[in-house]
Length: 100
Image 1: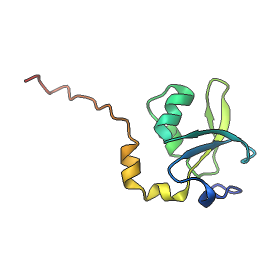
Image 2: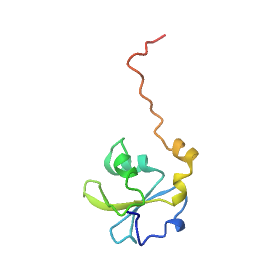
Image 3: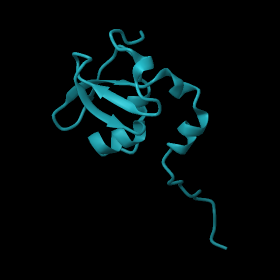
Image 4: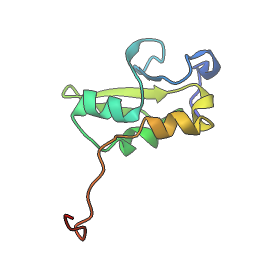
C-alpha cells in the first residue's frame, strides 16, 4: 500500500528521505538506497530499503533499531540514468576469467 500523509511530489528529486513514524520528523537524507544501507547499517545490499520506498511499511535501521519510512519523489522510477549512476561501481570478477 502506498504511503499516506506524505506529499511525495514536494520532495526534492533524486534524494531518498528517511522519516520517523510520525512522517514529519526527518531521520536522514541520502543520495540513493545504497548510500542509506551503507551509512545506516554498513550493508552493501540495499534491497531491504529499495523494496519499501514510498510504501506504508517502516524499515528498521541502525544499531538503535529505529523504524523509518523511506520516501522519494515519484520521478525516481522514471529516472533510469540517475538510478544506473547510483549503483555501486564495484563489479565482481568472474571466477572463470583468467589474467591475460
